[in-house]
Image 1 (cartoon, rainbow, N blue to C red):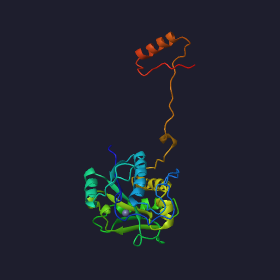
Image 2: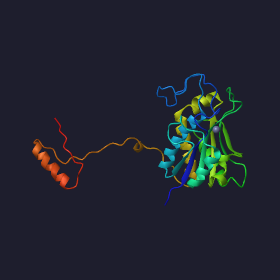
Image 3: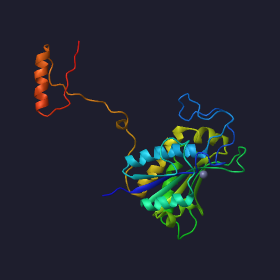
Image 4: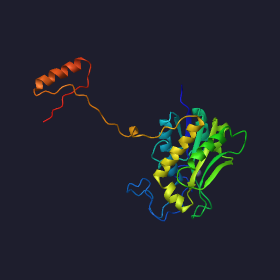
Length: 265
Ligand SMILES: [Zn+2]
């Protein structure tokens, strides 16, 4: 059986005008690895954080048996993505034959030059009944999961005339757009948008929503996803090299082409 395709769309591009936080009053370290990603006085770009979520969402969806079609990004490097026109994104998703799509964004309020108190997480679907498909159900599952993790104002499922929610143009059964936090809210920009742990949490929650939509049990990341332990098989230990060589020849004759001698002193 072929896998269900889900388009994962990262909003905007690396250099899209606007679509960023006001200047941050402190340094931002996405991964908490000691490397400053956004210097004090600079802005966190929406596309950078969106790709951070999309990369993690791809991993989540693949582990859960879905196929992922990337839209608006191509890899974890978010600094070299051109902004793709919405019509181009729609056409590519339609051509790929996706059952679902999700567009990942961060919200803004006001003119974007200063921080304000607007906050929270929302999921959007198309406002036109002939364009919305089965998106309401998917949006409710995703929003329910997004509201579970980090405590945020739950803005609920909202409707708007959005290109990335237009199931007719996208050729999808359901299409949603998530606004994960406000980049114009200082707390959300600093602790959520600028935090890779939040990106991971959102990826898991969005994936859980898709799993519920398909009646699947969500498969969480396990230790097995980390680099695997390697188990070697030893078939003999000899004090004379010629005996070791004889055993190696036997092993190779038996078809174990990768067998080798390792000297322990
Ligand atoms: Zn956006």
